[in-house]
Length: 453
Image (cartoon, rainbow, N blue to C red):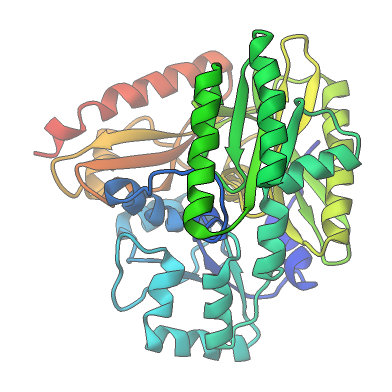
Protein backbone atom coordinates (compact mmCIF):
# COMPACT_ATOMS: atom_id res chain seq x y z
CA UNK A 1 0.00 0.00 0.00
CA UNK A 2 1.71 3.20 -1.13
CA UNK A 3 0.81 6.84 -1.33
CA UNK A 4 0.02 8.51 -4.61
CA UNK A 5 2.81 10.69 -5.98
CA UNK A 6 0.72 13.87 -5.76
CA UNK A 7 -1.99 13.58 -3.16
CA UNK A 8 -3.20 17.14 -3.71
CA UNK A 9 -4.01 16.37 -7.34
CA UNK A 10 -5.69 13.09 -6.36
CA UNK A 11 -7.80 14.87 -3.76
CA UNK A 12 -8.85 17.70 -6.07
CA UNK A 13 -9.85 15.25 -8.78
CA UNK A 14 -11.93 13.31 -6.28
CA UNK A 15 -13.60 16.44 -4.91
CA UNK A 16 -14.11 18.46 -8.09
CA UNK A 17 -13.40 16.24 -11.09
CA UNK A 18 -10.24 18.16 -12.00
CA UNK A 19 -6.67 17.97 -10.60
CA UNK A 20 -6.11 21.74 -10.86
CA UNK A 21 -9.26 23.18 -9.28
CA UNK A 22 -8.27 26.00 -6.88
CA UNK A 23 -9.55 25.49 -3.34
CA UNK A 24 -10.42 27.54 -0.30
CA UNK A 25 -9.44 25.30 2.62
CA UNK A 26 -11.05 25.50 6.03
CA UNK A 27 -9.75 23.62 9.08
CA UNK A 28 -12.97 23.32 11.11
CA UNK A 29 -11.76 20.60 13.46
CA UNK A 30 -14.18 18.61 15.65
CA UNK A 31 -17.02 19.20 13.22
CA UNK A 32 -18.62 16.28 15.09
CA UNK A 33 -19.81 18.78 17.71
CA UNK A 34 -22.07 20.35 15.07
CA UNK A 35 -23.30 16.97 13.83
CA UNK A 36 -24.15 15.97 17.42
CA UNK A 37 -25.98 19.19 18.27
CA UNK A 38 -29.51 17.82 17.68
CA UNK A 39 -28.78 14.18 18.51
CA UNK A 40 -29.58 12.32 21.72
CA UNK A 41 -26.41 10.56 22.74
CA UNK A 42 -24.53 10.36 26.03
CA UNK A 43 -24.56 13.43 28.27
CA UNK A 44 -21.13 15.00 28.06
CA UNK A 45 -19.38 18.06 29.31
CA UNK A 46 -19.03 20.88 26.82
CA UNK A 47 -15.35 21.48 26.23
CA UNK A 48 -14.59 25.16 26.51
CA UNK A 49 -11.88 27.46 27.75
CA UNK A 50 -8.33 26.61 26.79
CA UNK A 51 -9.23 23.18 25.37
CA UNK A 52 -11.68 24.57 22.84
CA UNK A 53 -9.37 27.46 21.97
CA UNK A 54 -6.48 25.09 21.22
CA UNK A 55 -8.63 22.77 19.09
CA UNK A 56 -9.94 25.70 17.06
CA UNK A 57 -6.38 26.78 16.24
CA UNK A 58 -5.72 23.40 14.67
CA UNK A 59 -7.18 25.23 11.66
CA UNK A 60 -3.54 25.94 10.75
CA UNK A 61 -3.13 22.33 9.56
CA UNK A 62 -4.99 23.36 6.40
CA UNK A 63 -1.83 25.16 5.27
CA UNK A 64 -0.19 21.78 4.67
CA UNK A 65 -2.82 20.64 2.14
CA UNK A 66 -2.86 23.83 0.11
CA UNK A 67 -1.22 24.43 -3.25
CA UNK A 68 0.42 27.72 -4.19
CA UNK A 69 -2.67 29.29 -5.76
CA UNK A 70 -5.11 28.16 -3.08
CA UNK A 71 -6.61 30.20 -0.27
CA UNK A 72 -6.68 29.12 3.37
CA UNK A 73 -8.99 30.82 5.86
CA UNK A 74 -7.37 30.99 9.31
CA UNK A 75 -8.61 32.46 12.57
CA UNK A 76 -5.48 34.61 12.82
CA UNK A 77 -2.35 35.27 10.78
CA UNK A 78 0.37 32.63 11.26
CA UNK A 79 3.74 33.42 12.80
CA UNK A 80 5.81 34.58 9.80
CA UNK A 81 8.87 32.68 11.03
CA UNK A 82 6.91 29.43 10.98
CA UNK A 83 5.81 30.14 7.42
CA UNK A 84 9.43 30.87 6.52
CA UNK A 85 10.51 27.51 7.91
CA UNK A 86 7.88 25.67 5.88
CA UNK A 87 9.07 27.51 2.76
CA UNK A 88 12.71 26.63 3.55
CA UNK A 89 11.71 22.98 3.56
CA UNK A 90 10.24 23.35 0.08
CA UNK A 91 6.55 23.34 1.02
CA UNK A 92 4.37 25.65 -1.05
CA UNK A 93 2.48 28.40 0.74
CA UNK A 94 -1.03 29.55 -0.20
CA UNK A 95 -2.69 32.94 0.15
CA UNK A 96 -4.05 33.36 3.66
CA UNK A 97 -7.38 34.99 4.49
CA UNK A 98 -8.16 36.11 8.04
CA UNK A 99 -11.53 37.30 9.39
CA UNK A 100 -11.79 40.76 10.89
CA UNK A 101 -12.22 39.32 14.39
CA UNK A 102 -11.95 35.86 15.89
CA UNK A 103 -13.55 34.33 18.95
CA UNK A 104 -11.30 31.62 20.47
CA UNK A 105 -14.41 29.55 21.30
CA UNK A 106 -15.69 29.59 17.68
CA UNK A 107 -14.57 27.51 14.74
CA UNK A 108 -12.87 29.24 11.85
CA UNK A 109 -16.04 28.76 9.77
CA UNK A 110 -18.14 30.61 12.34
CA UNK A 111 -15.56 33.41 12.43
CA UNK A 112 -15.73 33.69 8.63
CA UNK A 113 -19.54 33.83 8.69
CA UNK A 114 -19.38 36.80 11.07
CA UNK A 115 -17.25 38.84 8.64
CA UNK A 116 -19.35 40.21 5.78
CA UNK A 117 -16.30 41.51 3.92
CA UNK A 118 -14.66 38.10 4.00
CA UNK A 119 -17.90 36.43 2.88
CA UNK A 120 -18.00 38.82 -0.09
CA UNK A 121 -14.36 38.03 -0.93
CA UNK A 122 -15.13 34.32 -0.87
CA UNK A 123 -17.97 34.97 -3.29
CA UNK A 124 -15.51 36.61 -5.68
CA UNK A 125 -13.34 33.52 -5.47
CA UNK A 126 -16.36 31.32 -6.16
CA UNK A 127 -17.06 33.22 -9.37
CA UNK A 128 -13.39 32.71 -10.32
CA UNK A 129 -13.74 28.93 -10.08
CA UNK A 130 -12.63 28.24 -6.51
CA UNK A 131 -14.37 25.63 -4.38
CA UNK A 132 -14.73 25.43 -0.60
CA UNK A 133 -12.98 22.39 0.94
CA UNK A 134 -13.61 22.15 4.70
CA UNK A 135 -12.18 19.65 7.15
CA UNK A 136 -15.73 18.32 7.35
CA UNK A 137 -19.12 19.68 6.32
CA UNK A 138 -21.79 20.71 8.82
CA UNK A 139 -24.59 23.27 8.63
CA UNK A 140 -22.04 26.02 9.42
CA UNK A 141 -19.88 25.34 6.37
CA UNK A 142 -22.96 24.83 4.22
CA UNK A 143 -24.25 28.26 5.30
CA UNK A 144 -20.87 29.85 4.55
CA UNK A 145 -20.88 28.27 1.09
CA UNK A 146 -24.43 29.44 0.38
CA UNK A 147 -24.01 32.99 1.65
CA UNK A 148 -20.73 33.49 -0.18
CA UNK A 149 -21.71 31.77 -3.41
CA UNK A 150 -18.62 29.57 -3.05
CA UNK A 151 -19.61 26.02 -4.06
CA UNK A 152 -18.65 23.15 -1.78
CA UNK A 153 -16.05 20.66 -2.95
CA UNK A 154 -17.80 18.10 -0.78
CA UNK A 155 -21.13 16.33 -0.29
CA UNK A 156 -23.95 17.99 1.63
CA UNK A 157 -23.90 18.36 5.40
CA UNK A 158 -26.72 15.83 5.66
CA UNK A 159 -24.73 13.15 3.83
CA UNK A 160 -21.53 13.89 5.74
CA UNK A 161 -23.35 13.66 9.06
CA UNK A 162 -25.12 10.43 8.13
CA UNK A 163 -21.99 8.52 7.10
CA UNK A 164 -19.98 9.71 10.11
CA UNK A 165 -22.35 8.23 12.65
CA UNK A 166 -21.00 5.25 14.57
CA UNK A 167 -24.42 3.69 14.02
CA UNK A 168 -23.78 3.88 10.27
CA UNK A 169 -20.33 2.30 10.73
CA UNK A 170 -21.68 -0.73 12.60
CA UNK A 171 -24.52 -1.26 10.15
CA UNK A 172 -22.16 -0.99 7.19
CA UNK A 173 -19.77 -3.50 8.76
CA UNK A 174 -22.66 -5.91 9.28
CA UNK A 175 -23.83 -5.51 5.68
CA UNK A 176 -20.30 -6.08 4.34
CA UNK A 177 -19.59 -8.98 6.72
CA UNK A 178 -16.55 -7.20 8.15
CA UNK A 179 -15.40 -8.41 11.56
CA UNK A 180 -16.29 -6.07 14.40
CA UNK A 181 -16.71 -6.35 18.19
CA UNK A 182 -20.06 -7.84 19.24
CA UNK A 183 -22.54 -5.07 19.86
CA UNK A 184 -25.79 -3.28 19.17
CA UNK A 185 -26.90 -0.05 17.49
CA UNK A 186 -29.55 2.08 19.18
CA UNK A 187 -31.71 4.71 17.51
CA UNK A 188 -34.73 4.38 19.84
CA UNK A 189 -35.15 3.97 23.60
CA UNK A 190 -36.57 0.48 23.01
CA UNK A 191 -33.43 -0.53 21.11
CA UNK A 192 -31.32 0.93 23.92
CA UNK A 193 -33.24 -1.17 26.48
CA UNK A 194 -32.51 -4.33 24.46
CA UNK A 195 -28.85 -3.35 24.07
CA UNK A 196 -28.38 -2.67 27.78
CA UNK A 197 -30.02 -5.99 28.65
CA UNK A 198 -27.53 -7.71 26.34
CA UNK A 199 -24.70 -5.63 27.91
CA UNK A 200 -25.77 -6.74 31.37
CA UNK A 201 -25.35 -10.37 30.33
CA UNK A 202 -21.85 -9.61 29.00
CA UNK A 203 -20.91 -7.96 32.31
CA UNK A 204 -22.40 -10.82 34.34
CA UNK A 205 -20.17 -13.18 32.36
CA UNK A 206 -17.11 -11.18 33.43
CA UNK A 207 -16.77 -8.90 30.41
CA UNK A 208 -16.89 -5.17 29.87
CA UNK A 209 -18.86 -3.04 27.42
CA UNK A 210 -18.36 0.37 25.93
CA UNK A 211 -21.22 2.80 25.26
CA UNK A 212 -20.49 5.28 22.48
CA UNK A 213 -22.17 8.47 21.39
CA UNK A 214 -22.72 8.21 17.64
CA UNK A 215 -20.80 11.46 17.10
CA UNK A 216 -18.28 11.34 19.91
CA UNK A 217 -14.71 12.38 19.10
CA UNK A 218 -11.39 12.67 20.93
CA UNK A 219 -12.55 10.65 23.91
CA UNK A 220 -15.80 12.56 24.37
CA UNK A 221 -19.11 10.69 24.44
CA UNK A 222 -17.68 7.30 25.37
CA UNK A 223 -17.87 5.34 28.60
CA UNK A 224 -16.52 1.90 29.54
CA UNK A 225 -18.83 -0.08 31.82
CA UNK A 226 -17.90 -3.11 33.93
CA UNK A 227 -20.67 -3.09 36.56
CA UNK A 228 -24.44 -3.36 36.43
CA UNK A 229 -24.95 -0.27 38.59
CA UNK A 230 -22.95 1.81 36.11
CA UNK A 231 -25.09 0.43 33.30
CA UNK A 232 -28.17 1.58 35.21
CA UNK A 233 -26.64 5.06 35.53
CA UNK A 234 -26.17 5.23 31.77
CA UNK A 235 -29.79 4.18 31.22
CA UNK A 236 -31.08 6.80 33.68
CA UNK A 237 -28.99 9.58 32.13
CA UNK A 238 -30.22 8.83 28.63
CA UNK A 239 -33.86 8.52 29.74
CA UNK A 240 -33.60 11.76 31.70
CA UNK A 241 -32.41 13.60 28.60
CA UNK A 242 -35.19 12.02 26.57
CA UNK A 243 -37.82 13.08 29.12
CA UNK A 244 -36.59 16.67 29.11
CA UNK A 245 -36.61 16.85 25.32
CA UNK A 246 -39.84 14.94 24.76
CA UNK A 247 -38.06 12.72 22.23
CA UNK A 248 -37.59 8.96 22.15
CA UNK A 249 -34.83 8.79 19.54
CA UNK A 250 -31.21 8.17 20.51
CA UNK A 251 -27.92 7.80 18.66
CA UNK A 252 -25.77 5.29 20.52
CA UNK A 253 -23.68 2.17 20.03
CA UNK A 254 -23.12 -0.48 22.72
CA UNK A 255 -20.21 -2.86 22.13
CA UNK A 256 -18.27 -5.51 23.98
CA UNK A 257 -14.84 -4.27 25.05
CA UNK A 258 -12.43 -6.55 23.22
CA UNK A 259 -8.71 -7.11 23.68
CA UNK A 260 -6.39 -5.41 21.20
CA UNK A 261 -2.69 -5.16 20.54
CA UNK A 262 -2.58 -2.18 18.20
CA UNK A 263 -4.84 0.61 17.00
CA UNK A 264 -4.70 1.32 13.26
CA UNK A 265 -5.91 4.00 10.88
CA UNK A 266 -6.09 3.48 7.14
CA UNK A 267 -6.74 6.25 4.68
CA UNK A 268 -8.37 6.40 1.25
CA UNK A 269 -10.17 8.79 -1.06
CA UNK A 270 -13.54 8.19 -2.73
CA UNK A 271 -14.01 10.02 -6.03
CA UNK A 272 -17.17 11.59 -7.37
CA UNK A 273 -17.21 8.73 -9.88
CA UNK A 274 -17.04 6.13 -7.11
CA UNK A 275 -13.38 5.19 -7.58
CA UNK A 276 -11.47 4.33 -4.41
CA UNK A 277 -7.81 5.32 -4.05
CA UNK A 278 -6.16 3.64 -1.05
CA UNK A 279 -3.27 5.63 0.41
CA UNK A 280 -1.71 3.99 3.48
CA UNK A 281 -2.19 2.42 6.88
CA UNK A 282 -0.61 3.77 10.07
CA UNK A 283 -0.45 2.72 13.68
CA UNK A 284 -2.64 5.09 15.67
CA UNK A 285 -1.43 6.21 19.09
CA UNK A 286 -4.28 6.72 21.56
CA UNK A 287 -4.68 7.33 25.29
CA UNK A 288 -8.11 6.57 26.83
CA UNK A 289 -9.67 6.94 23.39
CA UNK A 290 -8.00 10.31 22.72
CA UNK A 291 -5.89 10.52 19.58
CA UNK A 292 -2.22 11.20 20.33
CA UNK A 293 -0.59 10.67 16.95
CA UNK A 294 0.59 8.12 14.39
CA UNK A 295 3.60 5.88 13.83
CA UNK A 296 4.43 4.52 10.39
CA UNK A 297 5.09 2.41 8.51
CA UNK A 298 2.70 0.14 10.38
CA UNK A 299 4.13 -3.18 11.58
CA UNK A 300 1.78 -5.42 9.62
CA UNK A 301 2.15 -8.50 7.45
CA UNK A 302 1.41 -8.43 3.73
CA UNK A 303 -1.71 -10.49 4.43
CA UNK A 304 -2.98 -7.99 6.97
CA UNK A 305 -2.35 -5.08 4.61
CA UNK A 306 -4.19 -6.87 1.80
CA UNK A 307 -7.17 -7.43 4.12
CA UNK A 308 -7.30 -3.72 4.95
CA UNK A 309 -7.06 -2.74 1.27
CA UNK A 310 -9.99 -5.03 0.49
CA UNK A 311 -11.96 -3.52 3.38
CA UNK A 312 -11.18 0.01 2.17
CA UNK A 313 -12.43 -0.80 -1.33
CA UNK A 314 -15.63 -2.34 0.03
CA UNK A 315 -16.29 0.52 2.46
CA UNK A 316 -15.47 3.14 -0.17
CA UNK A 317 -17.85 1.54 -2.63
CA UNK A 318 -20.67 1.62 -0.10
CA UNK A 319 -19.93 5.25 0.81
CA UNK A 320 -20.04 6.19 -2.86
CA UNK A 321 -23.43 4.50 -3.30
CA UNK A 322 -24.67 6.49 -0.30
CA UNK A 323 -23.61 9.77 -1.90
CA UNK A 324 -20.28 10.43 -0.21
CA UNK A 325 -17.04 11.43 -1.90
CA UNK A 326 -13.80 12.73 -0.41
CA UNK A 327 -11.32 11.68 2.27
CA UNK A 328 -12.04 8.67 4.49
CA UNK A 329 -10.09 7.43 7.48
CA UNK A 330 -11.13 4.15 9.09
CA UNK A 331 -10.10 3.17 12.60
CA UNK A 332 -9.22 -0.50 12.98
CA UNK A 333 -7.54 -2.80 15.52
CA UNK A 334 -5.19 -5.76 15.68
CA UNK A 335 -6.18 -8.33 18.30
CA UNK A 336 -3.62 -10.12 20.53
CA UNK A 337 -3.53 -13.06 18.08
CA UNK A 338 -2.77 -10.78 15.10
CA UNK A 339 -6.31 -10.95 13.74
CA UNK A 340 -7.89 -7.77 12.41
CA UNK A 341 -10.97 -5.83 13.31
CA UNK A 342 -10.94 -3.94 9.97
CA UNK A 343 -13.57 -1.41 11.01
CA UNK A 344 -14.13 0.25 14.38
CA UNK A 345 -15.51 3.48 12.98
CA UNK A 346 -15.51 5.57 9.81
CA UNK A 347 -14.27 9.17 9.74
CA UNK A 348 -15.57 10.45 6.41
CA UNK A 349 -13.80 13.79 6.59
CA UNK A 350 -10.21 14.94 6.70
CA UNK A 351 -8.21 13.05 9.31
CA UNK A 352 -5.08 14.07 11.19
CA UNK A 353 -3.10 11.84 8.84
CA UNK A 354 -4.58 13.69 5.83
CA UNK A 355 -2.61 16.78 6.79
CA UNK A 356 0.63 14.81 7.01
CA UNK A 357 0.53 13.50 3.45
CA UNK A 358 2.12 16.39 1.56
CA UNK A 359 4.89 16.62 4.19
CA UNK A 360 5.45 12.88 3.75
CA UNK A 361 5.61 13.20 -0.04
CA UNK A 362 8.08 16.08 0.06
CA UNK A 363 10.25 15.40 3.10
CA UNK A 364 10.19 11.75 4.19
CA UNK A 365 12.78 9.59 2.39
CA UNK A 366 12.03 5.97 1.44
CA UNK A 367 12.50 3.55 4.29
CA UNK A 368 12.31 6.20 7.00
CA UNK A 369 10.58 5.73 10.35
CA UNK A 370 8.05 8.46 11.18
CA UNK A 371 6.22 9.58 14.31
CA UNK A 372 3.44 12.19 14.18
CA UNK A 373 2.48 13.49 17.60
CA UNK A 374 1.81 16.53 19.75
CA UNK A 375 3.69 17.80 22.78
CA UNK A 376 1.75 19.51 25.60
CA UNK A 377 3.29 22.83 26.58
CA UNK A 378 2.88 25.31 29.40
CA UNK A 379 4.25 28.74 28.61
CA UNK A 380 4.22 31.94 30.71
CA UNK A 381 3.10 33.95 27.68
CA UNK A 382 3.12 33.97 23.88
CA UNK A 383 6.03 31.98 22.50
CA UNK A 384 7.41 33.28 19.18
CA UNK A 385 8.39 30.66 16.63
CA UNK A 386 11.88 32.16 16.51
CA UNK A 387 12.32 31.31 20.21
CA UNK A 388 11.07 27.76 19.64
CA UNK A 389 13.44 27.41 16.72
CA UNK A 390 16.38 28.37 18.92
CA UNK A 391 15.24 25.90 21.56
CA UNK A 392 15.04 23.08 19.00
CA UNK A 393 18.20 24.02 17.13
CA UNK A 394 19.92 20.85 15.93
CA UNK A 395 16.80 18.67 16.04
CA UNK A 396 14.67 20.51 13.47
CA UNK A 397 14.65 18.90 10.02
CA UNK A 398 16.70 20.92 7.55
CA UNK A 399 16.81 20.71 3.75
CA UNK A 400 18.77 17.72 2.51
CA UNK A 401 18.78 15.87 5.83
CA UNK A 402 17.01 12.61 6.70
CA UNK A 403 16.49 13.06 10.43
CA UNK A 404 14.69 15.77 12.35
CA UNK A 405 11.42 17.36 13.41
CA UNK A 406 8.97 19.35 11.28
CA UNK A 407 6.53 21.65 13.08
CA UNK A 408 3.19 20.93 11.42
CA UNK A 409 1.00 23.31 13.47
CA UNK A 410 2.31 26.17 15.59
CA UNK A 411 -0.77 28.32 16.29
CA UNK A 412 -1.89 25.74 18.88
CA UNK A 413 1.15 26.66 21.03
CA UNK A 414 -0.18 30.16 21.70
CA UNK A 415 -3.92 29.56 21.46
CA UNK A 416 -4.57 29.76 25.20
CA UNK A 417 -1.48 30.45 27.31
CA UNK A 418 -0.30 28.90 29.53
CA UNK A 419 -1.81 25.78 27.91
CA UNK A 420 -0.75 24.84 24.42
CA UNK A 421 0.29 22.01 22.10
CA UNK A 422 3.05 21.71 19.57
CA UNK A 423 2.20 19.42 16.64
CA UNK A 424 5.11 17.84 14.83
CA UNK A 425 6.30 15.11 12.48
CA UNK A 426 9.54 13.35 13.47
CA UNK A 427 11.64 11.53 10.88
CA UNK A 428 14.60 9.18 11.35
CA UNK A 429 16.23 6.29 9.50
CA UNK A 430 15.83 3.75 12.32
CA UNK A 431 13.36 3.10 15.11
CA UNK A 432 16.07 3.63 17.71
CA UNK A 433 17.00 7.03 16.31
CA UNK A 434 13.34 8.01 16.11
CA UNK A 435 12.88 7.12 19.77
CA UNK A 436 15.99 9.08 20.71
CA UNK A 437 14.82 12.10 18.70
CA UNK A 438 11.44 12.06 20.42
CA UNK A 439 13.11 11.87 23.84
CA UNK A 440 15.41 14.78 23.03
CA UNK A 441 12.55 16.97 21.81
CA UNK A 442 10.59 16.15 24.95
CA UNK A 443 13.57 17.04 27.13
CA UNK A 444 14.08 20.38 25.45
CA UNK A 445 10.43 21.34 25.55
CA UNK A 446 10.32 20.82 29.31
CA UNK A 447 12.55 23.91 29.52
CA UNK A 448 10.18 26.15 27.55
CA UNK A 449 9.05 28.12 30.58
CA UNK A 450 12.59 28.93 31.68
CA UNK A 451 13.82 29.62 28.15
CA UNK A 452 11.10 32.16 27.38
CA UNK A 453 11.08 34.24 30.58
